[in-house]
Image 1: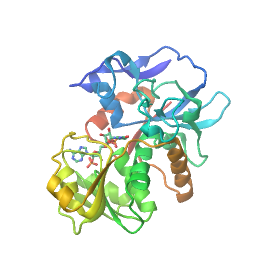
Image 2: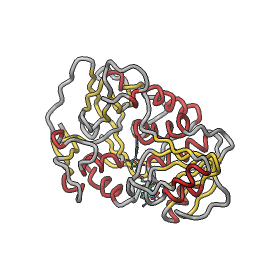
Image 3: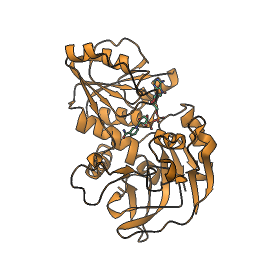
Length: 321
Ligand SMILES: NC(=O)c1ccc[n+]([C@@H]2O[C@H](COP(=O)([O-])OP(=O)(O)OC[C@H]3O[C@@H](n4cnc5c(N)ncnc54)[C@H](OP(=O)(O)O)[C@@H]3O)[C@@H](O)[C@H]2O)c1
């Protein structure tokens, strides 16, 4: 079948191991379903996989793509939850030590067919297109958990999103605005800051700028490049929710500020199946839709990978089949 995959770990030049080609038809184990992929979205995670980060060398070749939406054999339209855990695990799947994300152990969604446990295929809301639904399973679910499960923020408080144009960042802006928070965003270029305002941010600022006042919570996926700004941006008692470290993973902790101002740093990863179901319902009831910055046929996936590698995002990059 057609597939976009990583042939081997390539730490320095991730696109060197990106293959747009053919992979064997997948087998469907008991308890799993085959989903005919209609749309799948690109995440920074796919670049990490090409680099060999978070995946064992023996797992290559690996079909890329953590997110997707498609159709089951009986015609049911579905959205995929890409956290695959131990069937015996009870409770929050993101805490299961044996969990993996699609593309870490199981083959991903950039293909004609993806095979997932039956419980990982949720009904697609009729109001979302396949392309929109394909944005939900990773970036949007991560943003949903960061904001509504981990931050403890409430309507009327001020949130700062570090980064304007990324998948998680654009989701945070839309979700925060819909939930009644005051949404402030930093962006690296004028164009990205304008995008944030268009998506519903109340104000956007150059990265690292001193803000008009301190905020209740900061949402971090950037890491090293923005961390000290995030720490300085917080009110006493404020919270940083962090789910990524694109620019580098070891920011100075600024410990004195952390304890003296009684700040909290909270980690967040993906989200549960129930949270994905709630996110889908929230999108429907609040009328919010993901910003798709680029939509490409899957056989032109290389162009999308080049865009995310260069930081030329304007929302999600979606591949259609
Ligand atoms: N833990 C989890 O479950 C989880 C889930 C999803 C994503 N993540 C992680 O979150 C990160 C973002 O993922 P994504 O898919 O949203 O990526 P993306 O779409 O490529 O977005 C990258 C974002 O990072 C910002 N950025 C990158 N380098 C920066 C720098 N040097 N200075 C300031 N801002 C910078 C960009 O801001 P501008 O708009 O200003 O360019 C943009 O908003 C990745 O590290 C990913 O692995 C983690």
